[in-house]
Amino acid sequence: MTFPDEDQLTTQLARRTALAPPSSTSWVLRVLDGTDAGKGFRIDDVTTRRVLIGQSPACEVQLSDRSVSRRHAALESDPGGLRLVDLGSRNGTWVGRLRIRDAYVDDGEVVRFGDASVRLESDGVVHTLSASEEVSFHRVIGASPEMRRLYPLLQRIAGADVPVLLEGETGTGKEVVAEAIHEASPRSRGPFVVLDCTTVSSSLLEAELFGHERGAFTGAISSRIGLFEEANGGTLFIDEIGDLDVALQAKLLRALEKKEVRRVGSSNIVKLDVRIVAATRRDLDREVQARRFRDDLFYRLAVARVELPPLRKRQGDVAFLTRFFWLRMGGDDASLSPDVVQRFEGYDWPGNVRELANAVARQIALGDFEVPARTGEVSAVSSGIDPIDRIVRSGQPLPLARQAVLDEFERRYVTHMLAEHGGNVTRAAAASGIGRRYFQMVRAKR
Image 1 (cartoon, rainbow, N blue to C red):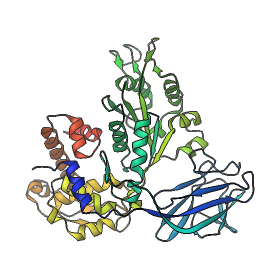
Image 2 (cartoon, rainbow, N blue to C red):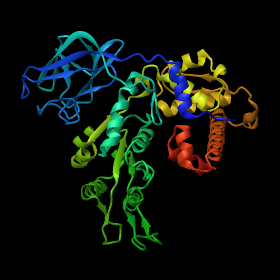
Image 3 (tube, helix red, strand yellow):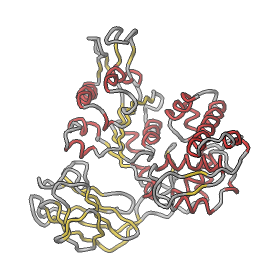
Image 4 (spheres, rainbow, N blue to C red):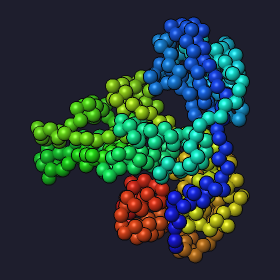
C-alpha cells in the first residue's frame, strides 16, 4: 500500500475546502465599580477562541479585585450567541440576582464577578479577522477558523525561543504542536526530547530529568545523563507538567533559572541550552490557587501560553480531518461515504483528534460504525474483511476483538511507515502526522 505525501495531501484537501475568513463582533467590557472602576477591555475576537476573565496575568480581562478568582470566567461564542461560563470561581458569576454557571448574555448586560460589576457593550459591527490561508502548520492540521487563527501565533512563538505552555484537553494534539514549534524554530537541527510526567514514577522523575551517577540510589548500576542533557541545543517537551510533584517543581524551576543541572549523586554542574515546551490538561491557574503547583514555576513556563481548542469547537474540522486521516491511512477517497462523515460530525469526540484518528483507522479496518449521539466510545461492527478474518473467527468478546483489530492495524501501519523511511522514527512520524512517542509505544507492544 502506498501512502500519500502529507504536504501534497493537505494541499489537495485545501483546494476542496472553502476557507471563509473568520469574523466577529467587537466587545468592550467596562468595569463599573470595585478597584478597577473605569477600566475598559476591548475584545475583537470571541468567535475563534475563549476570552479569560480573572486575576491571573494570563487572562485577557485581568481584574485586580481580590474577590475575583485567578481564572474566574470565560466568554466564548457559539451559534446561540455570546456565552459566559463560570470556571469554578470562589465567589461566583452573577447576572442580576442569579448566580450562573453557563448562560447567554446580551449587549448591555451587567455581570458581576465576585464584587466587580462589568457591563458588556457590543459595537454591533461584524469585523473580518486575520487568519492564515494555510490548513496546516508543519504537522498540525486543521482548516477551521479556530486553527487558522493559531498558526501565525505558533510561527511567532517558534521564533521567539521562550518557554511555552500548551493547554488543552486530552487528545487535542499538544505533543504534535510542540514538535511543530520545535521544527519551525532555530533549534530544529537540535534534539526534540519528550518527558511524560504520567509515565514515570515520582521517585524516578528527578533522575530521569537530571540524570544520575553510578550508585546514587538502589538500581543505579551505571551513570546516565538525564533528559535535560539529551535535549541540549534543542527542545525538551514536558507533557502533563501539572502532574509533577511539588518538590520536583522547585528543582525544575532552579534548572530553568540557572540553565544548569546537577545529576543525582554528583556535585558537578552541567551548563545547558534547552528550550522548554510544557503541556497540561489541567487548569494550572486552579492548581496554583490550590497550592498544588508553584506560581513562580507557572510564570516561568507561561511566557508564551497557547490554549488548544477541543475538536468539538473547531468548525468544519471533523469532516476535514476525517478525509485527511482516511486518505493518509490508505483509504480510497471514493469509499468515504457522506453518511460516515455526517455521523462523525454529530459526535462530540471527547477524546478529540486522537479519538477521531483511531475511529478512522477502525472504519477502514472494519467498514462500519455506530456512533453515539453525544458520549461514549465509537463501537465497530465487523464486516468480515479478509485481513481481520482470523480475529473475527476467534470468538473473542467484541471489545477485545475490536482492540485486537486496532492493534494489528497500528502495528502494520507503523511497520510500513518505518520501512518507507529507512527505520527513521523521526521521519516516519513526520510523514504520518503523529508524535514520535506514538511510534515508540506501538513498537513496544510488538
